[in-house]
Image 1 (cartoon, rainbow, N blue to C red):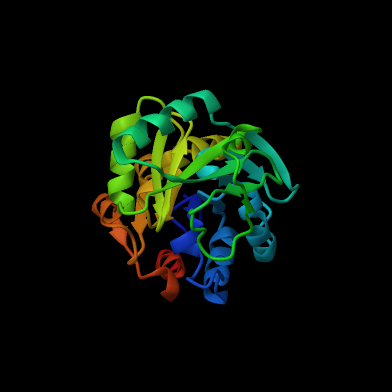
Image 2 (image 1 turned 90 degrees about the horizontal axis):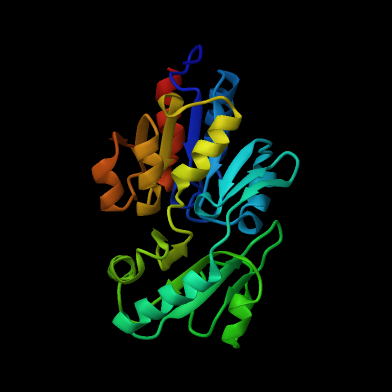
Length: 267
């Protein structure tokens, strides 16, 4: 516990949580985080985005601390622009997993996140990328497997995200982890990997523990982080599964829900 603030660590998701729908971080949220860190709390960004899709946001925030990226696969030092840890997906297991899922639900649209500070996101035919994030198209499936990957993204022409995630878990949960991270974002990950894995590594580097932590999120991929943390705060726009697990609910990402909770705790 810090003077004037009841937690030593603030863990925040990005999309749907810290970021507004237009991708910005409001001045109110920046001020609330600055006040909490001035009161002695550390802030760790914990996002499903891999480092290449995260680092420009952190630079804009003036964020110099640790960030957990790639759904827990990467611990990134934003101040030094350096990757501290990185876990990659076993490509052979991922291929088996994809085959098992497609045997159940039919052909999938695919994308993949390559490992590294500047790893490309490869996007195959039919896959719809959220927003304006940079991506590299591919048409030859062998390109997908030609370099180390953090994750594979899957979409289905007719199934909902929830239904696809459930089908993927049932068909291939013994080979890969499955995470539903947002609209149109179902991911296949190294087995056992989650935001909690990466957050625990980053927190340990700072000498902090679950009991020190308040976490903010909006999607089912935040469930492990909430389970790990002492206190989980779901955004008003959060998925029902996360709301059911949360200790409390704040306002939406577009009305600065993170800031509202931090301001209340700061008194």
